[in-house]
Image 1: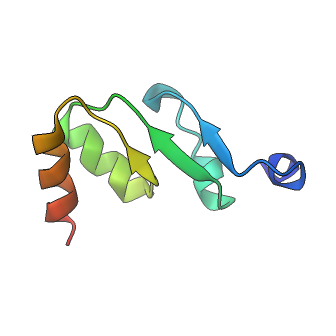
Image 2 (image 1 turned 120 degrees about the horizontal axis):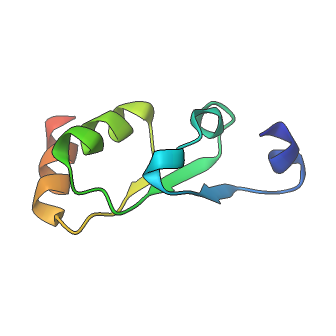
Image 3 (image 1 turned 30 degrees about the horizontal axis):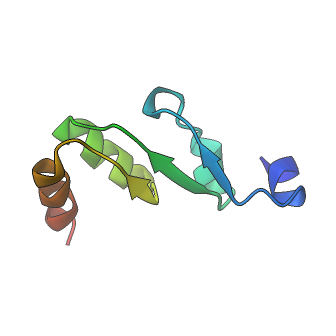
Length: 68
């Protein structure tokens, strides 16, 4: 991932199934979509994703609120 940062890449957009944990370590922004499972939301938030898109805003809001 350092090569991406050196090239000026600030964001990597991938489906949840291909979440690059290395991007989280290297400081790149990671956004995931369409996450509708509460357990997956919690896991991804625990990994430190920067953005989470869902068809279930109610569940996403609960997952975020539970972290506070």
